[in-house]
Image (cartoon, rainbow, N blue to C red):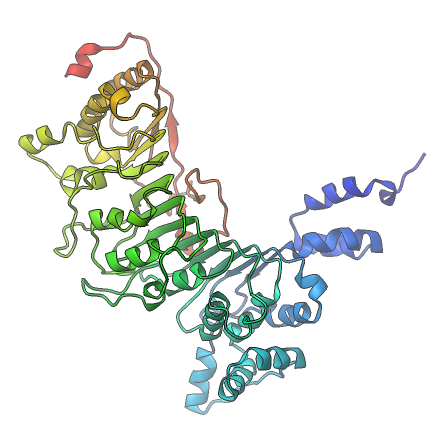
Length: 509
Protein backbone atom coordinates (compact mmCIF):
# COMPACT_ATOMS: atom_id res chain seq x y z
CA UNK A 1 0.00 0.00 0.00
CA UNK A 2 1.53 3.32 -1.07
CA UNK A 3 1.40 6.49 0.99
CA UNK A 4 1.94 10.03 -0.22
CA UNK A 5 4.07 12.49 1.73
CA UNK A 6 0.97 14.63 2.25
CA UNK A 7 -0.71 11.80 4.12
CA UNK A 8 1.71 12.22 7.01
CA UNK A 9 0.45 14.16 10.04
CA UNK A 10 1.31 17.87 9.86
CA UNK A 11 3.35 17.62 13.07
CA UNK A 12 5.68 15.03 11.51
CA UNK A 13 6.05 17.02 8.29
CA UNK A 14 6.79 20.15 10.29
CA UNK A 15 9.44 18.28 12.28
CA UNK A 16 11.07 17.05 9.05
CA UNK A 17 11.04 20.51 7.47
CA UNK A 18 12.52 22.06 10.62
CA UNK A 19 15.69 19.99 10.06
CA UNK A 20 16.34 21.59 6.65
CA UNK A 21 19.15 24.12 7.02
CA UNK A 22 19.32 25.33 3.41
CA UNK A 23 17.19 28.24 2.24
CA UNK A 24 17.32 26.95 -1.33
CA UNK A 25 15.98 23.59 -0.18
CA UNK A 26 13.23 25.27 1.87
CA UNK A 27 12.24 27.33 -1.19
CA UNK A 28 11.99 24.15 -3.27
CA UNK A 29 9.84 22.49 -0.64
CA UNK A 30 7.58 25.55 -0.43
CA UNK A 31 7.01 25.42 -4.20
CA UNK A 32 5.70 21.85 -4.25
CA UNK A 33 2.16 22.42 -2.94
CA UNK A 34 0.02 24.72 -0.80
CA UNK A 35 0.26 22.49 2.28
CA UNK A 36 4.07 22.40 2.23
CA UNK A 37 4.18 26.11 1.44
CA UNK A 38 2.26 26.86 4.63
CA UNK A 39 4.61 24.66 6.65
CA UNK A 40 7.89 25.78 5.02
CA UNK A 41 7.47 29.55 4.84
CA UNK A 42 7.71 30.14 8.64
CA UNK A 43 11.03 28.27 8.68
CA UNK A 44 12.28 30.12 5.61
CA UNK A 45 11.71 33.55 7.15
CA UNK A 46 12.47 32.68 10.77
CA UNK A 47 16.13 33.68 10.42
CA UNK A 48 17.08 36.17 7.71
CA UNK A 49 20.84 36.20 7.10
CA UNK A 50 22.48 38.52 4.57
CA UNK A 51 26.11 38.42 3.49
CA UNK A 52 28.18 40.90 1.46
CA UNK A 53 28.12 39.86 -2.21
CA UNK A 54 29.82 42.86 -3.74
CA UNK A 55 33.48 43.46 -4.66
CA UNK A 56 35.88 44.00 -1.79
CA UNK A 57 35.16 47.27 -0.07
CA UNK A 58 31.76 47.83 -1.73
CA UNK A 59 29.57 46.27 0.98
CA UNK A 60 26.76 45.42 -1.44
CA UNK A 61 23.87 43.34 -0.13
CA UNK A 62 21.97 42.50 -3.30
CA UNK A 63 19.06 40.95 -1.41
CA UNK A 64 18.54 43.78 1.11
CA UNK A 65 16.50 46.17 -1.01
CA UNK A 66 14.14 43.62 -2.63
CA UNK A 67 13.77 41.84 0.73
CA UNK A 68 12.86 45.11 2.45
CA UNK A 69 10.34 45.93 -0.28
CA UNK A 70 8.74 42.50 0.07
CA UNK A 71 8.50 42.50 3.85
CA UNK A 72 7.22 46.07 4.01
CA UNK A 73 4.46 45.14 1.55
CA UNK A 74 3.74 41.81 3.26
CA UNK A 75 3.30 42.28 7.02
CA UNK A 76 2.24 38.62 7.23
CA UNK A 77 5.75 37.60 6.15
CA UNK A 78 7.44 40.29 8.26
CA UNK A 79 5.82 38.76 11.36
CA UNK A 80 7.61 35.48 10.65
CA UNK A 81 11.11 36.99 11.06
CA UNK A 82 12.50 36.28 14.53
CA UNK A 83 16.25 36.57 13.88
CA UNK A 84 18.21 38.89 11.59
CA UNK A 85 21.93 38.70 10.71
CA UNK A 86 24.18 40.87 8.52
CA UNK A 87 27.83 40.19 7.68
CA UNK A 88 29.71 42.56 6.48
CA UNK A 89 28.59 46.05 7.43
CA UNK A 90 25.87 47.86 5.47
CA UNK A 91 27.24 50.67 3.33
CA UNK A 92 26.43 54.29 3.99
CA UNK A 93 26.87 55.69 0.49
CA UNK A 94 30.58 56.48 0.68
CA UNK A 95 31.37 55.23 -2.86
CA UNK A 96 28.50 57.16 -4.43
CA UNK A 97 29.49 60.26 -2.49
CA UNK A 98 33.03 59.93 -3.81
CA UNK A 99 31.83 59.49 -7.40
CA UNK A 100 29.59 62.53 -7.16
CA UNK A 101 32.43 64.63 -5.77
CA UNK A 102 34.56 63.63 -8.76
CA UNK A 103 31.77 64.18 -11.27
CA UNK A 104 31.67 60.50 -12.21
CA UNK A 105 28.41 58.90 -13.42
CA UNK A 106 26.16 57.09 -10.93
CA UNK A 107 23.36 54.64 -11.77
CA UNK A 108 20.63 55.88 -9.48
CA UNK A 109 17.81 53.60 -8.33
CA UNK A 110 14.07 54.05 -8.37
CA UNK A 111 12.42 54.40 -4.96
CA UNK A 112 9.33 52.24 -4.35
CA UNK A 113 6.21 53.95 -3.04
CA UNK A 114 6.31 51.74 0.06
CA UNK A 115 9.70 53.23 0.94
CA UNK A 116 8.47 56.78 0.31
CA UNK A 117 5.49 56.30 2.62
CA UNK A 118 7.56 54.97 5.52
CA UNK A 119 10.25 57.64 5.10
CA UNK A 120 7.57 60.31 5.24
CA UNK A 121 6.11 58.81 8.43
CA UNK A 122 9.53 58.43 10.07
CA UNK A 123 11.14 61.75 9.15
CA UNK A 124 11.11 64.61 11.65
CA UNK A 125 11.18 67.37 9.05
CA UNK A 126 11.07 67.96 5.31
CA UNK A 127 14.84 68.25 5.03
CA UNK A 128 15.38 64.83 6.60
CA UNK A 129 12.71 63.32 4.34
CA UNK A 130 14.31 64.86 1.25
CA UNK A 131 17.79 63.62 2.15
CA UNK A 132 16.56 60.14 3.06
CA UNK A 133 14.73 59.81 -0.26
CA UNK A 134 17.84 60.97 -2.10
CA UNK A 135 20.03 58.41 -0.33
CA UNK A 136 17.54 55.68 -1.20
CA UNK A 137 18.41 56.31 -4.87
CA UNK A 138 22.08 55.61 -4.21
CA UNK A 139 23.08 52.02 -5.12
CA UNK A 140 25.39 51.61 -2.10
CA UNK A 141 23.31 53.05 0.74
CA UNK A 142 22.22 49.93 2.63
CA UNK A 143 21.96 51.94 5.85
CA UNK A 144 19.01 53.95 4.49
CA UNK A 145 17.15 50.72 3.63
CA UNK A 146 18.05 48.77 6.78
CA UNK A 147 16.67 51.58 8.95
CA UNK A 148 13.27 51.13 7.27
CA UNK A 149 13.23 47.34 7.38
CA UNK A 150 14.20 46.41 10.95
CA UNK A 151 11.49 48.36 12.82
CA UNK A 152 8.91 46.71 10.52
CA UNK A 153 9.71 43.25 11.94
CA UNK A 154 7.34 43.09 14.94
CA UNK A 155 8.44 39.64 16.13
CA UNK A 156 12.18 40.25 15.81
CA UNK A 157 13.91 38.66 18.82
CA UNK A 158 17.62 38.77 17.98
CA UNK A 159 19.71 41.12 15.88
CA UNK A 160 23.27 40.27 14.79
CA UNK A 161 24.95 43.17 13.00
CA UNK A 162 28.35 44.39 11.92
CA UNK A 163 27.87 48.15 12.07
CA UNK A 164 30.23 50.94 11.11
CA UNK A 165 30.42 54.64 11.89
CA UNK A 166 28.23 56.73 9.65
CA UNK A 167 25.11 54.54 9.55
CA UNK A 168 23.09 57.59 10.55
CA UNK A 169 19.64 56.31 9.56
CA UNK A 170 19.96 53.08 11.50
CA UNK A 171 21.28 55.04 14.48
CA UNK A 172 18.37 57.49 14.31
CA UNK A 173 15.74 54.76 14.23
CA UNK A 174 17.26 52.82 17.14
CA UNK A 175 17.64 56.00 19.21
CA UNK A 176 14.09 57.10 18.44
CA UNK A 177 12.72 53.68 19.35
CA UNK A 178 14.52 53.78 22.68
CA UNK A 179 13.35 57.32 23.44
CA UNK A 180 9.79 56.82 22.11
CA UNK A 181 10.14 59.59 19.54
CA UNK A 182 8.43 59.73 16.16
CA UNK A 183 7.65 57.30 14.52
CA UNK A 184 7.58 55.32 17.80
CA UNK A 185 5.74 57.92 19.87
CA UNK A 186 2.37 56.19 19.50
CA UNK A 187 3.42 52.57 18.96
CA UNK A 188 6.72 51.35 20.48
CA UNK A 189 9.31 49.77 18.21
CA UNK A 190 11.42 46.63 18.65
CA UNK A 191 9.08 45.34 21.37
CA UNK A 192 10.10 41.71 20.86
CA UNK A 193 13.85 42.36 20.49
CA UNK A 194 15.70 40.85 23.44
CA UNK A 195 19.26 40.14 22.22
CA UNK A 196 21.69 42.16 20.10
CA UNK A 197 25.18 41.40 18.81
CA UNK A 198 27.38 44.26 17.58
CA UNK A 199 30.64 43.05 16.05
CA UNK A 200 33.39 44.49 13.91
CA UNK A 201 35.67 43.00 11.26
CA UNK A 202 38.91 44.98 11.45
CA UNK A 203 41.88 43.05 12.82
CA UNK A 204 43.60 46.27 13.90
CA UNK A 205 41.06 48.94 14.78
CA UNK A 206 37.90 48.68 16.83
CA UNK A 207 34.44 50.21 16.57
CA UNK A 208 33.05 52.82 18.96
CA UNK A 209 30.81 52.09 21.94
CA UNK A 210 27.88 54.31 20.94
CA UNK A 211 25.68 51.45 19.72
CA UNK A 212 25.75 49.86 23.19
CA UNK A 213 24.10 52.92 24.67
CA UNK A 214 21.48 52.95 21.91
CA UNK A 215 20.60 49.28 22.36
CA UNK A 216 20.34 49.63 26.14
CA UNK A 217 17.35 51.95 25.71
CA UNK A 218 15.27 49.44 23.76
CA UNK A 219 12.13 48.42 25.68
CA UNK A 220 12.66 44.65 25.99
CA UNK A 221 16.43 44.28 25.70
CA UNK A 222 17.94 41.50 27.81
CA UNK A 223 21.31 40.64 26.26
CA UNK A 224 23.90 42.91 24.65
CA UNK A 225 26.95 41.29 23.06
CA UNK A 226 29.89 43.31 21.76
CA UNK A 227 33.00 42.26 19.84
CA UNK A 228 35.98 44.44 18.83
CA UNK A 229 34.59 47.61 20.45
CA UNK A 230 36.68 50.34 22.07
CA UNK A 231 36.34 53.67 23.84
CA UNK A 232 37.86 56.90 22.59
CA UNK A 233 41.68 56.84 22.62
CA UNK A 234 43.76 58.38 25.34
CA UNK A 235 43.77 58.67 29.12
CA UNK A 236 41.46 61.67 28.81
CA UNK A 237 39.45 60.21 25.94
CA UNK A 238 36.04 61.70 25.38
CA UNK A 239 33.22 60.03 27.28
CA UNK A 240 30.66 58.46 24.95
CA UNK A 241 27.56 60.65 24.88
CA UNK A 242 25.06 57.83 24.37
CA UNK A 243 26.31 56.01 27.48
CA UNK A 244 26.54 59.21 29.50
CA UNK A 245 22.90 60.02 28.66
CA UNK A 246 21.58 56.75 30.13
CA UNK A 247 19.56 57.11 33.30
CA UNK A 248 20.39 55.03 36.36
CA UNK A 249 18.41 51.76 36.61
CA UNK A 250 16.64 52.48 33.32
CA UNK A 251 17.51 49.47 31.16
CA UNK A 252 16.01 45.98 31.17
CA UNK A 253 19.32 44.42 30.04
CA UNK A 254 20.45 41.58 32.32
CA UNK A 255 23.42 40.22 30.32
CA UNK A 256 26.30 42.34 28.98
CA UNK A 257 29.15 40.56 27.22
CA UNK A 258 32.14 42.39 25.73
CA UNK A 259 34.80 40.24 24.07
CA UNK A 260 38.05 41.65 22.72
CA UNK A 261 36.86 45.11 23.78
CA UNK A 262 38.42 47.94 25.76
CA UNK A 263 36.46 50.66 27.54
CA UNK A 264 37.82 53.35 29.81
CA UNK A 265 36.49 53.68 33.35
CA UNK A 266 33.98 56.46 32.64
CA UNK A 267 32.27 54.56 29.84
CA UNK A 268 32.16 51.41 31.97
CA UNK A 269 30.61 53.30 34.88
CA UNK A 270 27.99 54.96 32.68
CA UNK A 271 27.12 51.66 31.04
CA UNK A 272 26.90 49.59 34.22
CA UNK A 273 24.73 51.99 36.21
CA UNK A 274 21.96 51.76 33.62
CA UNK A 275 20.70 48.17 34.08
CA UNK A 276 17.91 47.67 36.61
CA UNK A 277 19.33 44.27 37.59
CA UNK A 278 22.40 42.99 35.76
CA UNK A 279 22.83 39.24 36.25
CA UNK A 280 25.85 38.55 34.01
CA UNK A 281 28.84 40.71 33.05
CA UNK A 282 31.60 39.35 30.81
CA UNK A 283 34.52 41.60 29.94
CA UNK A 284 37.46 40.38 27.87
CA UNK A 285 39.96 43.23 27.54
CA UNK A 286 41.39 43.78 24.07
CA UNK A 287 44.65 45.56 23.27
CA UNK A 288 46.65 47.57 20.77
CA UNK A 289 44.99 49.75 18.14
CA UNK A 290 41.54 48.55 19.26
CA UNK A 291 41.68 51.45 21.72
CA UNK A 292 44.46 53.31 23.46
CA UNK A 293 42.27 54.24 26.40
CA UNK A 294 43.60 53.50 29.87
CA UNK A 295 42.73 50.37 31.82
CA UNK A 296 42.13 50.35 35.57
CA UNK A 297 41.55 46.95 37.21
CA UNK A 298 39.85 48.26 40.34
CA UNK A 299 37.78 50.82 38.44
CA UNK A 300 36.37 48.02 36.28
CA UNK A 301 34.99 46.34 39.41
CA UNK A 302 33.98 49.63 41.04
CA UNK A 303 31.84 50.37 37.97
CA UNK A 304 29.74 47.35 38.96
CA UNK A 305 28.82 48.92 42.31
CA UNK A 306 25.18 49.55 41.27
CA UNK A 307 24.86 45.82 40.53
CA UNK A 308 26.43 44.29 43.64
CA UNK A 309 23.13 42.82 44.86
CA UNK A 310 22.04 41.49 41.46
CA UNK A 311 25.19 40.12 39.80
CA UNK A 312 25.35 36.33 39.71
CA UNK A 313 27.96 35.71 36.99
CA UNK A 314 31.19 37.65 36.43
CA UNK A 315 33.99 36.97 33.92
CA UNK A 316 37.09 39.21 33.73
CA UNK A 317 39.68 38.22 31.15
CA UNK A 318 41.97 39.49 28.40
CA UNK A 319 42.26 38.56 24.72
CA UNK A 320 44.85 35.81 24.74
CA UNK A 321 46.42 36.32 21.30
CA UNK A 322 47.62 39.85 21.99
CA UNK A 323 48.33 40.10 25.68
CA UNK A 324 47.70 43.71 26.73
CA UNK A 325 50.74 45.82 27.52
CA UNK A 326 49.96 46.61 31.13
CA UNK A 327 53.19 48.61 31.34
CA UNK A 328 51.50 51.61 29.77
CA UNK A 329 51.90 54.48 32.25
CA UNK A 330 48.21 55.33 31.98
CA UNK A 331 47.14 51.83 33.11
CA UNK A 332 46.56 50.98 36.76
CA UNK A 333 47.06 47.27 37.37
CA UNK A 334 46.65 47.43 41.13
CA UNK A 335 45.06 44.05 42.00
CA UNK A 336 41.35 43.90 42.69
CA UNK A 337 41.13 43.96 46.48
CA UNK A 338 38.03 41.81 46.90
CA UNK A 339 34.93 40.37 45.29
CA UNK A 340 33.11 39.88 48.59
CA UNK A 341 30.80 42.85 47.94
CA UNK A 342 28.95 40.80 45.32
CA UNK A 343 26.70 39.06 47.82
CA UNK A 344 24.85 36.88 45.29
CA UNK A 345 27.73 36.04 42.97
CA UNK A 346 27.62 32.35 42.03
CA UNK A 347 30.14 31.99 39.19
CA UNK A 348 33.43 33.89 38.86
CA UNK A 349 35.81 33.42 35.93
CA UNK A 350 38.87 35.61 36.29
CA UNK A 351 42.36 35.91 34.82
CA UNK A 352 44.85 35.76 37.67
CA UNK A 353 46.42 39.08 36.65
CA UNK A 354 43.29 40.85 37.97
CA UNK A 355 43.79 39.21 41.38
CA UNK A 356 47.58 39.37 41.74
CA UNK A 357 48.43 42.34 39.51
CA UNK A 358 50.64 42.50 36.43
CA UNK A 359 53.74 41.58 38.43
CA UNK A 360 52.42 38.02 38.55
CA UNK A 361 53.57 37.36 34.96
CA UNK A 362 57.05 38.83 35.43
CA UNK A 363 59.76 37.56 37.74
CA UNK A 364 58.40 38.70 41.10
CA UNK A 365 60.64 38.95 44.12
CA UNK A 366 60.58 36.38 46.88
CA UNK A 367 59.09 38.92 49.29
CA UNK A 368 56.28 39.72 46.82
CA UNK A 369 55.50 36.02 46.44
CA UNK A 370 55.35 35.59 50.19
CA UNK A 371 52.83 38.43 50.46
CA UNK A 372 50.65 36.86 47.79
CA UNK A 373 50.41 33.33 49.22
CA UNK A 374 47.01 34.20 50.67
CA UNK A 375 45.95 36.15 47.58
CA UNK A 376 42.90 33.89 47.10
CA UNK A 377 41.93 33.63 50.76
CA UNK A 378 39.04 35.77 51.94
CA UNK A 379 38.76 37.26 48.46
CA UNK A 380 35.43 35.86 47.37
CA UNK A 381 31.81 36.05 48.60
CA UNK A 382 30.36 33.18 50.61
CA UNK A 383 27.74 32.72 47.88
CA UNK A 384 30.36 31.60 45.31
CA UNK A 385 29.71 28.15 43.82
CA UNK A 386 32.17 28.04 40.89
CA UNK A 387 35.63 29.63 40.65
CA UNK A 388 37.38 29.52 37.28
CA UNK A 389 40.99 30.79 37.28
CA UNK A 390 42.31 31.77 33.84
CA UNK A 391 45.85 32.17 32.43
CA UNK A 392 47.37 30.30 35.35
CA UNK A 393 50.52 29.81 33.26
CA UNK A 394 51.41 33.39 34.26
CA UNK A 395 52.63 31.94 37.55
CA UNK A 396 51.75 28.30 38.23
CA UNK A 397 53.77 28.23 41.45
CA UNK A 398 52.01 31.17 43.09
CA UNK A 399 48.49 30.17 42.01
CA UNK A 400 48.87 26.61 43.28
CA UNK A 401 50.19 27.80 46.65
CA UNK A 402 47.37 30.34 46.95
CA UNK A 403 44.82 27.68 45.98
CA UNK A 404 46.08 25.36 48.70
CA UNK A 405 45.67 28.10 51.30
CA UNK A 406 42.20 28.99 50.02
CA UNK A 407 41.02 25.38 50.16
CA UNK A 408 42.26 25.05 53.73
CA UNK A 409 39.86 27.89 54.65
CA UNK A 410 37.07 26.78 52.33
CA UNK A 411 34.40 26.25 55.00
CA UNK A 412 35.06 29.64 56.54
CA UNK A 413 35.30 31.72 53.37
CA UNK A 414 33.50 29.96 50.50
CA UNK A 415 31.30 27.24 52.04
CA UNK A 416 29.18 26.83 48.87
CA UNK A 417 32.14 26.37 46.52
CA UNK A 418 31.59 23.10 44.65
CA UNK A 419 33.60 23.54 41.44
CA UNK A 420 37.08 24.86 40.75
CA UNK A 421 38.51 25.22 37.25
CA UNK A 422 42.27 25.61 36.82
CA UNK A 423 43.05 26.81 33.28
CA UNK A 424 46.34 27.52 31.52
CA UNK A 425 48.97 26.14 29.16
CA UNK A 426 49.25 23.04 31.34
CA UNK A 427 50.26 20.37 28.83
CA UNK A 428 53.47 22.31 28.21
CA UNK A 429 54.22 22.61 31.94
CA UNK A 430 55.02 19.03 32.89
CA UNK A 431 57.07 20.15 35.90
CA UNK A 432 53.84 21.24 37.61
CA UNK A 433 51.73 18.16 36.91
CA UNK A 434 52.35 16.40 40.23
CA UNK A 435 51.48 19.49 42.21
CA UNK A 436 48.30 20.05 40.19
CA UNK A 437 47.30 16.46 40.88
CA UNK A 438 47.83 17.00 44.59
CA UNK A 439 45.70 20.14 44.64
CA UNK A 440 43.05 18.23 42.70
CA UNK A 441 42.95 15.55 45.37
CA UNK A 442 42.95 18.14 48.14
CA UNK A 443 39.95 19.80 46.48
CA UNK A 444 38.11 16.50 46.50
CA UNK A 445 38.62 16.12 50.25
CA UNK A 446 37.03 19.58 50.65
CA UNK A 447 33.97 18.64 48.59
CA UNK A 448 35.14 20.61 45.54
CA UNK A 449 35.37 19.19 42.02
CA UNK A 450 38.55 20.52 40.38
CA UNK A 451 38.73 20.55 36.59
CA UNK A 452 42.02 21.15 34.79
CA UNK A 453 41.79 22.80 31.37
CA UNK A 454 44.81 23.14 29.11
CA UNK A 455 44.93 25.96 26.59
CA UNK A 456 47.23 26.60 23.66
CA UNK A 457 49.14 29.77 22.86
CA UNK A 458 48.87 29.17 19.13
CA UNK A 459 47.61 32.00 16.92
CA UNK A 460 44.00 31.91 15.74
CA UNK A 461 45.23 30.84 12.28
CA UNK A 462 45.98 27.46 13.87
CA UNK A 463 44.32 24.79 11.72
CA UNK A 464 42.19 23.50 14.57
CA UNK A 465 40.74 26.90 15.51
CA UNK A 466 36.99 26.95 16.06
CA UNK A 467 34.44 29.73 16.50
CA UNK A 468 34.02 30.59 20.17
CA UNK A 469 30.65 30.38 21.82
CA UNK A 470 29.21 33.15 23.96
CA UNK A 471 27.86 33.24 27.49
CA UNK A 472 29.40 31.93 30.70
CA UNK A 473 29.21 28.37 29.37
CA UNK A 474 30.02 29.31 25.76
CA UNK A 475 26.68 27.83 24.73
CA UNK A 476 25.24 30.91 22.99
CA UNK A 477 25.78 31.06 19.23
CA UNK A 478 26.02 34.05 16.91
CA UNK A 479 27.10 34.20 13.27
CA UNK A 480 30.74 33.41 12.63
CA UNK A 481 33.12 36.33 13.04
CA UNK A 482 34.92 37.78 10.02
CA UNK A 483 38.65 37.09 9.45
CA UNK A 484 38.61 34.40 12.18
CA UNK A 485 38.62 37.17 14.78
CA UNK A 486 36.53 35.07 17.15
CA UNK A 487 38.18 31.73 16.32
CA UNK A 488 40.36 30.05 18.91
CA UNK A 489 42.13 26.70 19.22
CA UNK A 490 39.90 24.44 21.34
CA UNK A 491 40.70 23.89 25.00
CA UNK A 492 41.42 20.41 26.35
CA UNK A 493 40.21 19.02 29.65
CA UNK A 494 43.05 17.11 31.31
CA UNK A 495 42.14 13.73 32.81
CA UNK A 496 44.75 12.93 35.44
CA UNK A 497 45.79 9.35 36.19
CA UNK A 498 46.43 8.62 39.86
CA UNK A 499 48.63 5.75 40.97
CA UNK A 500 49.67 7.20 44.33
CA UNK A 501 47.96 8.59 47.45
CA UNK A 502 47.74 12.28 48.31
CA UNK A 503 51.34 13.42 48.61
CA UNK A 504 51.54 15.70 51.66
CA UNK A 505 55.21 16.30 51.04
CA UNK A 506 54.48 17.67 47.56
CA UNK A 507 51.83 20.02 48.92
CA UNK A 508 54.12 21.29 51.66
CA UNK A 509 56.89 21.74 49.10
